[in-house]
Amino acid sequence: MFCLDYAVAFFTHYSLIQAHHRMTACNTAEPDFIDQKHCVPPCSFLLNSAFGIAAGAVTASTLYPVDYVRMTTVKAGSSHFAYGVIPFMACYFGIFFTATAIEPATHGPSKDVDPTSALTRNTSPYEREAPPFVRKAGFAAVATLAASGAELPFDFSKQNVSGGMRMAAITAALRVPLGSLLLLAYDRILTHPN
Image 1: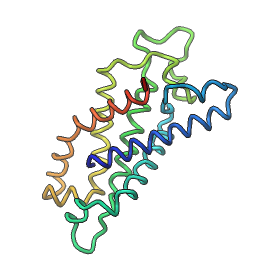
Image 2: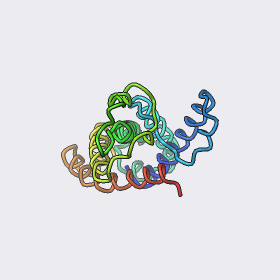
Image 3: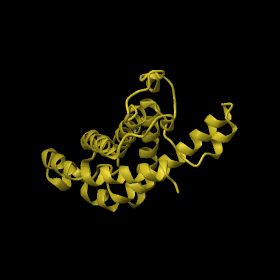
Image 4: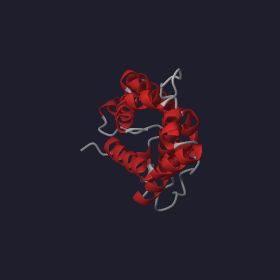
């Protein structure tokens, strides 16, 4: 992943979340939901991953014509299309937003609330307390590490620049702190727009 990849993916993901909220608001009896200032990703891992796949595909397709780094680092005759961005974003958004949405309240689950209910219905994380920052940072690190691992087999440019799969894995692991911080910043923008 390169910087512009993140920017395009975050923009696309945000647009998809906004569209999801508008469609959900039209199908519910909550007329004020569409005017809500918060943009909250759904609790569903499949839906979060699907948004990630779409964001990755849009990112790879948008940047393909101007991706000079990949163009110059892949072997002649090979495609420089950034296939790795798609599984990266699927894991990145899927794991992080699902984990933060189903994380139990920091003060423990209420006796009258089923703690597994977030797994079976598409509820907003604002119905319970958000996980503390340290937990979110842990979720971001796990999501970024898993995403980096999912990306590696498809990112021939990174393998060529690094000199092989082993060095590419080490390079990807070194990027986990940056990817985690970007995800935390993006989450903050999504959930606290003011």
